[in-house]
Length: 274
Image (cartoon, rainbow, N blue to C red; front, side):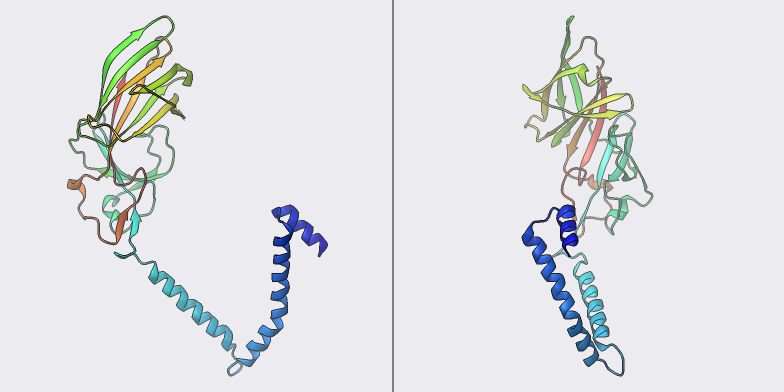
């Protein structure tokens, strides 16, 4: 018994009260075995294990009740995830979901679907996605306009105006550079921001997510870089709804949109080089 107690301490880093409770529980179970055998013999019916059969029947009934209780309904709807992605440069659109499963509502978007990374749209994201081709809509793409572009022997300062012509709710910025040190500072509306650095095929992607745009639906982006640094900007604007013209079946009462990014969104991407 002592080696067993030592093994529990070392393996699970347990405290003495926890070990004591576990040992008492194991001893109690051992003491109840003869009682259980006696009850089982007393409850036998025609030499059949009646107690085991009753327990099995109760288990089946309980399992059936649990399955029925989990059936989606208006009072207990299920969550479904899907968004619409439009590449304004390639004139291609997709339905995409981070959840690889479909349901009776979501199936309308993924009748002919594939699974795989969505790197054509998000170069730094290698997660497996459920995706299918969608109709291309004439949605206004986000615009990046050069305000000033000045260079010196020590660096380059590029000021851009980012505008969502369709009144989107937020932006996502992806700056593709060869070296993360190429971009020395990123400022959005006079506020410095720290990007997320993600590796891509030919360098790195500096990601900045901006939730909640001002009433003008425009921002000023200032980039300070090394001298003569070429920049490729992937500009995404995001709105919180799916294109109604492409949704054949409205959302039923027993389904809710999943919360978080990538759900119930229309995302349009436009690439710029500076």
